[in-house]
Image (tube, rainbow, N blue to C red; front, side, top):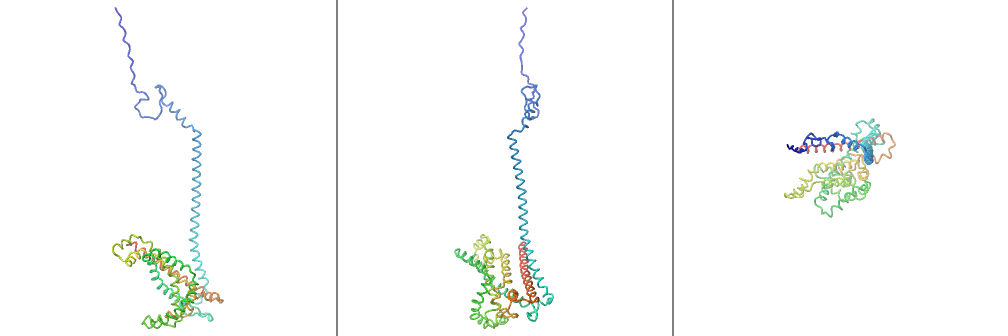
Length: 384
């Protein structure tokens, strides 16, 4: 009986899941080709190989540490420099305040004898008699205020006209030379203005102007009394004219600079609507710059109140109060300049120092009023 030939066994590939083909979440570890090897054997070896620093990694770490240390040192240096910067400029600001307070206190302390002797009568008395020891500040205060008022009445319109001419009317080739000339006038010493007023302006006024002013304007009711008096050529009106010439460069320069800050689009839009040059200046330029213009005017007023040498040359130095502007008078600064070197009496010297304190207080009040006015204007503009 024939035996059956055995059928050859067919070998099939096992499709059981292996660690490499498992559908479990990948762990990021390398697996061995041997399915019976521990799954983390090669991964642990790789991690140990990665943790072992190489010489290049050590150099890189050292470089990073050096950069970090350098950055920290630079930050500390910048902080020290910033503190020094703040200290220096804070000291400059404090120095201004200290100097201002020290000047006021020194003059007030120097004038304490006169203030204790005369009290408030020092401000209301018209007497100034060195021999009798009677001193009053009303005449110098009156002369200071009158001459400054005359100067501002003349200087403000003229300065406004100069600024408008240089910014709106003058051809481009003329603006720079005229602007430079105005700035040069501001650098002329006040004694030069005083000598010019005494030796040039006063004779011309005495011979050709004041006689006509006294004869014609002196006859006008109510205001004629302001222009009566002998045509001497020196007096409060002449002092006001010299002061006006001195403060015009300051006010005109400020007005010119602030007028140049007006955007060209605003003026061109107004011109496109048919506005004239005067309408553009009055309706566009002035409203846009009125705060700065007022500040420049009060800057000139502060200069006029404290001017000394130019006024001393032409005011006449007479201790009288008169409504006539052609009459001689005096001011606080000219009184101090004329008499301080010869003040040997302690009461006389104290009275002069008290006059300086009054001038300081007067200037401070005027500038404080200007600042208050500017603050109100800015607040009102903010509400619009």
